[in-house]
Length: 144
Image (cartoon, rainbow, N blue to C red; front, side, top):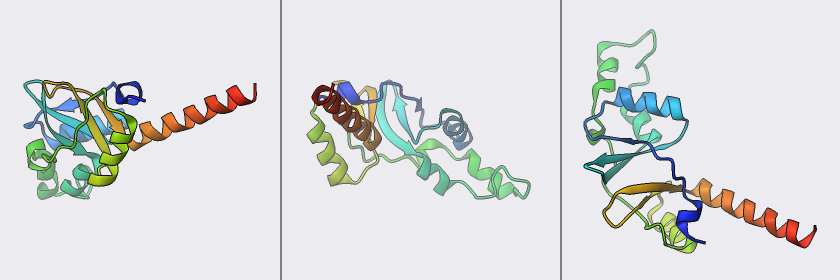
């Protein structure tokens, strides 16, 4: 099975100078866990919802918010994003992806083309969903 067949093709990206307030809005709106950081159509980083939660004050956006709490929303993506990228090409096999997840202990792997342009994202959930679907198809074939 090729990565291009199981990856999530819908990606949402941000730029290095976007604010964490913008990032928080995207996470709240789209209900996913990773954003790809792109500059000039090239992948330069990844930002997870966990990265965001660590960077924001717990009181930001609450009634007890202070000026310091609000300032955390004005930080920029480049200040907290991960620059150590683990990527995979779309024509790589599933076993290659599993090895990358295990070796680097990441929760997503951006799928990039030859120009480092992101074309998808692979999470361990994508792999689990594929495995479940594959097992269901096998059961159907064996027990029509």
